[in-house]
Image 1: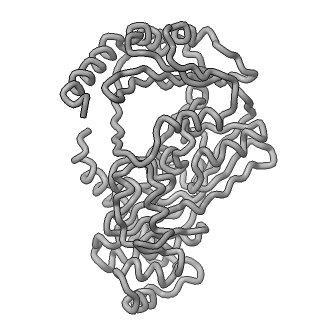
Image 2: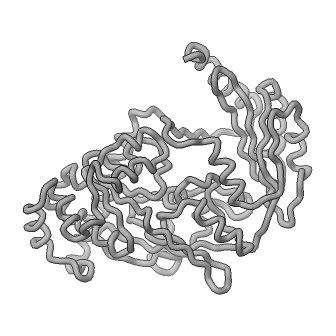
Image 3: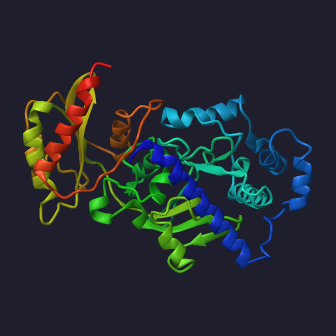
Length: 402
C-alpha cells in the first residue's frame, strides 16, 4: 500500500467515528453528561475566555492540568514515546492525559459535542494513543487537533481464580508480562515488549500462543468502552454482543477502550530465542518454512518469526523460534529443519520466560526511525517466496550504498 493512501484511510476512520457519534446522539437525545460536568454552554463560554482553540480550551476548562500544550515537558514526553519518527513529528494543538475512565468519558463527550458545534473543524478531530507503535503519520496522533494519550491507565489485576487478567490500555506488553510470569500465568499478547496493548488487541493481534488460541482479541472476555458520546459501557458476549464482535479487529472506530478483560492460563518458562544466518542459507530456509507452515496438523506450540533483513548493503536471515510447551522442550523436532541449518552467526536459544523473549524481539526494532507496515497474504509457495526476495533485492541495488 502506498504511503499516500493513508491520509484517505485515516479520514475514513474519522468519518466513521463522527457518523457513529451522530447516530448515537440522534437515537438518544436525553443522553446525560458525565457526572459533575458543567453544561455544554458553560463549557463553550469559558473556553472563549482561554487561550488556544475552542476544543483544547474547553478541555482545559473541564480537565485542568490533564491537558498539556506544546513545549511543556509532558507534551514533549508524549511526542517522544511514539515508535516511528513520522508520529514523533506530528504536532497536535494539545494532548489530553486522562488518569481515569471518567476523564476519557469527559474528553470524548466534549470533543464529540463541540465537533457538531464547530461543524467538525480540524481542531476538534482527535486521535487515541495506547503505545503509539503504529508508524503511519496520524495513526495515533492528530495533526493540529487533539491527541488523547492513555499512558496513565496502567492498572493490572488478576482475578482470584487466576482465569482472567484485567488491564488498562496505557500498558505495554512489557509491563504486563513480568506480573504474570511471577505468578506462573500467561495471556495471549504482543510479541514485542514495547508495543502497546490497545492497538494490538483492537486490531486483532498475533501472539506466541496464536496457534493454540487464535488472535489476541479472541481471548478478550469484556471491554470497558467509552462510546462516541461519552457513555461508559461494558461490552461482552451478552451486553452489546454486536459491538463485542465489531471490536475484535475494528480498531478504535467504535469507541475508546479503557479496560481489557482477557482469559489467562497456567504457563511457565519455555524454549525460545533467535538465530542469525547468512543469506546463502536461504534455499534451506524456504524449504523448512514450507514444511513447517504446511504441516498437517500444525504443531500448536510452534511460533516462528521468519525475517529477511537488509542492512548496510547486506541481507541476513533472522529467525525467532518460540516453542511454548510447558515443561520446556528444547530443540523440538518441529524446528529441527531450521535449527540444523549452518552456519549460524548468532544463537540465543534458551529456556526463559515470556518477558525475556519479548524484550529480545524489541531489541531488533529501536524507536525513532522511519517505518512502514505493509502486509501481504498469499498461498504457501517456495517459488513465490523466492521471487519476492529477488524482487526486493533487485529494487534495493540502486540504493544499497545510500
